[in-house]
Length: 113
Length: 115
Image (cartoon, rainbow over all chains, first blue to last red; front, top):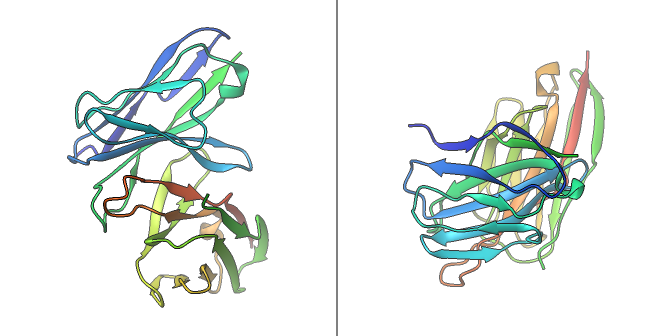
């Protein structure tokens, strides 16, 4: 049971480049989400999904795009990277029914230069 | 908008001492979580608190929840160096049928236990 798998673990981008952060879970969780963690800010929700084909914005969605074509995968796309997107990104999943806890991936450390 | 406030944000304590981290939140919630994060690592789940008056203990850590006061505490007993980490509380305002699933984090408490 792999849990939540994020790739890559580290990435350096140039301003203006695009890329996709991958997130996959094998627990059949309906709910998946992306957070960014910045020093002194805690974790802030970017986008989330409550099932295949259903996504919604979180607190800081600008500059990011998501889709959910399968239950297992929830990729996060940076459309045109900016230095302000330098951060550590975490993917999390959960059952959407009441009582489900959250499982976090190991994180992706992104630097935009 | 749900707001979660932790204090203190930084805590330096000697081994063997006791201390409490506080987590206040602004709206009614279904459940509250405590996580531990070591430098460069992901979040490790410590406690899930589901109801008013819930108390859970694991080793030297004890967490409690008062939903009426919208307050959770993480109490550290006889601290040891291995407890040095950043601790986050997070409030889940997921509601059945509401279509809103938000896990809102506090800013974290960086704990340093000094030998």
